[in-house]
Image (tube, rainbow, N blue to C red):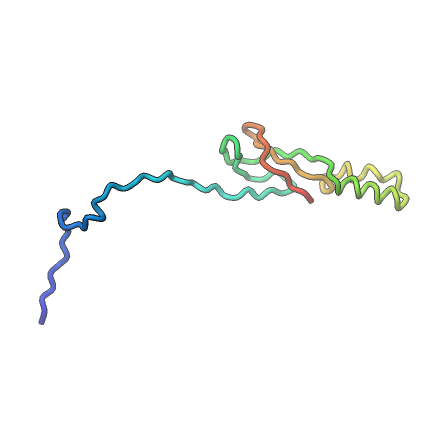
Length: 108
């Protein structure tokens, strides 16, 4: 029967590769992706780095104008303003609630 020696750690027996000074590399922290929607969302500001709820402002887009033109052509002249009054027909611009920087746009 063979006798097994227990493993013992001796710092002088460490291979020379492990004794080399380690280079310090920058620590990269990845923030979760900003998933923006038509209402206020949790997002990380690209400017100040704060993660919080965004402020949303709605703005008429090409889709809004085309929908209004279509309503006008069909004959609903009195309903032309509906796409401009309905947030679902407009683009949602998200800004940081802390510093006011632009975060992104959700286009319907």
